[in-house]
Image (cartoon, rainbow, N blue to C red; front, side, top):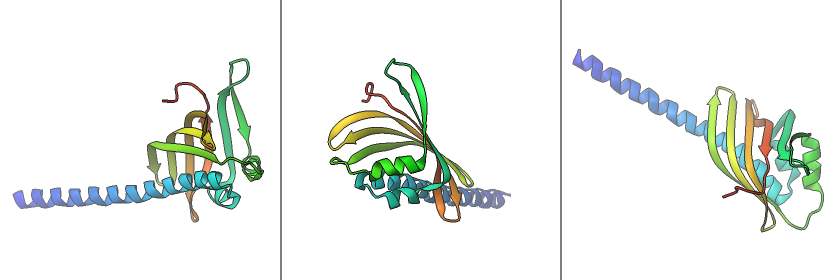
Length: 154
């Protein structure tokens, strides 16, 4: 009976290691999609940016308007890509930190803190919440919502 228990424990440990390795591979693939988006922003590479999105993706922002009231704005991926394609002398540099990654099958939910710079000048900070879908072409962003603020940006 002791031998069976020992073999069972070894088997369970092996399964846990395999699951952890699979999770790490998927997490890295999800991270790659998101970092590719921001690499494309930094270099104004709209082809790279578009590669990260699924069709019919949604982009939203929560921020305060001029009166200080919270508002939510929706922007199309096409409008976002066009804004990046417009000539601008300074690079758009969103520096992110992966805070939480959750994956269940073909769905990933990712939370990142960020600080946004135009060139070397700080612009604003907040958090991004991404939803991604794993298609045959890999992980694609289907939804982004972010917050934007200028204070409490430690």
